[in-house]
Length: 423
Image 1 (tube, rainbow, N blue to C red):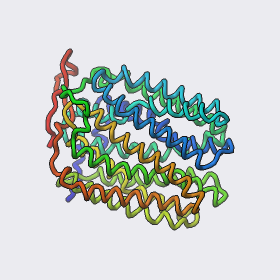
Image 2: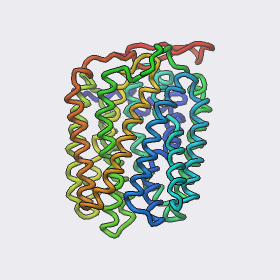
Image 3: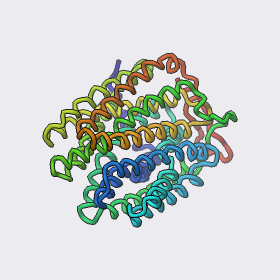
Image 4: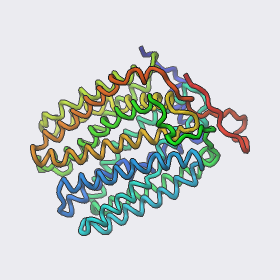
């Protein structure tokens, strides 16, 4: 059941809150290298004469190293604060990608080492922003609406990002595109960590446990599902390049990826314009099911205009599913692990995307572009099956919610955020 959101609870209300627009914009710019990295890397490898399999392998190495780094860096943020982790990580990641852009694929060991460095130190800005929302916005309903806004804003990045990469490639080269987006990434991270909410944020007290956020069964179930959502999206990245090559129109790749982002943007705006009743875990199953169904028509691979339309359709339920997943993470994350828990979601999504890219490359080369998009359809269906099979674990939230600080006039020196069960 859904109701129209009151005017005072809309996106403008969120953006008018002190620091909110800066944090959102800085995080999106800071995440450009990660969000557009697979696209820029694929175009770079192809420009240098590399195969789809090589591009997929490098993207997989980048994604897997990102997956290793995100939860470790997220835990470090929970323990040490944001500025001491986010900015150094952003600089190291950018240096790794600059090495890849300058060295090329002539020495494969160096190329793989460079992308591993870039992936390993990708700063956990996404999880960090979601950890900041409660201290910036306060009320639970505003925090949930910020999650939806966050998902919508991501799709703006995923719409504009591919076009930016395509423009940079057209004006200069794929290597220049890699360098520019990573410089922008460092500037975005800098904007976030210099803000007052980031500088003063502290995680709630956490129970000492080597598993950290992963001791929550509900969180594990969610991560298992979104691994396959990531796999579907990763396979689309490589398959769309193959589709553009088949049609003899390299620019079609950027347009298809932008169309997917546009669909997600449209879906996210509609989803965030309403208040939803009922358990978010049940709603998430419906959204992931619709997402899976919308991936299947991509296998038809019609002409560019129709394919762009199918790409829009395939993205419609992505942002709503992500926004709902953010709430589920909040409900199931153990106390004091909020950044780590969100980083684990990014991690499993990234691992899935990396393996989806790696699987789509050989699938395209062995059986054509349709086979590459079939990987996406299969990934979406398995994501739904995981949620259906783990319904019991997702029924009982075990988390303590996000951290919320109520301090008149700003930060209380030495205070930590008090956690509450938002539900």
